[in-house]
Length: 198
Length: 134
Image (cartoon, rainbow over all chains, first blue to last red; front, side, top):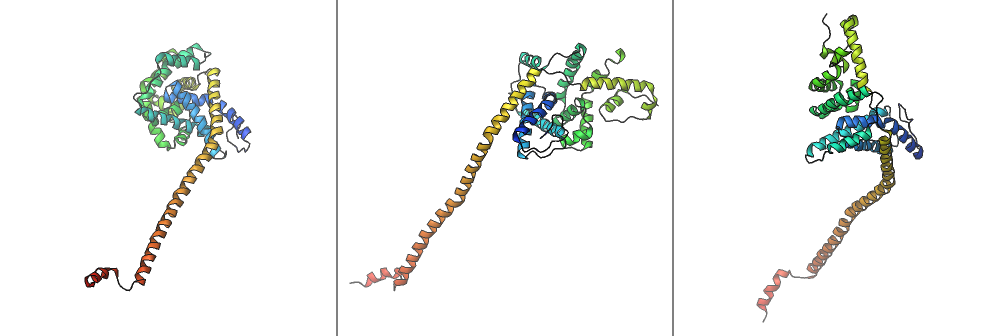
């Protein structure tokens, strides 16, 4: 069906091979998808279940379609992940009573999820400004958040984002421009605060 | 020409502004651009995640996939068969009931017609006969 680093999904009628290759592909994409979900949802346990949903939906869709070829499986999977997160964010709006994990629970999950990085400075950078930026994503609309996450963290081209979100490039530009305007302060600190030091 | 400001650089970082002739000729702006390019690389670099966490997540996905593929197909067949049975029953039962009802009605009509045919007088005249009975 697919190689672990395949750019293209290919047909395989052998179910056992498909399952094994899907597993390999999942392993190669899992971290990226989890981080994307975490950045969009800002909740580790919810990102965990959104990631699982994404791969299950992908598997079911591939099964339904009889493992038809996919030209860009990574973008296709990203689209499933983004839509899964958008659905969760939409339903979250109605769940005023939704229990947020207690602060200490969230810290425990974070400790479990984040392995020690090689560079202490990078870790501080990531936790401090990155954390602030992620909290600031609440200021964005759902579409702006999706566009910003795909551009800022995944460095995807605007055309690629347009394809994933089924929008035209002009609309993506407008969403991104507005997102950057709303995150002006955080982005300033991220890129320009230490300008004198370097 | 004016140097690029923070806004310009930010737009360039996010693909909303193209490089221009000033950027090509201005050393100061090129240095700033290079600095920002490195800063972007740090942002894009994915943080490390514990292999233990990822492995647990994969196990959970695999168990759900197995569960889904084991239960989904027979359940889907059973549901489809059930739905088909309901549809067939829905289509055929009223037809049977209607035809039996219409049969009864037809029989009644025919027997009434036959009785009327055999009778020389209409039923409505029968009470008048009583008036002339001794």
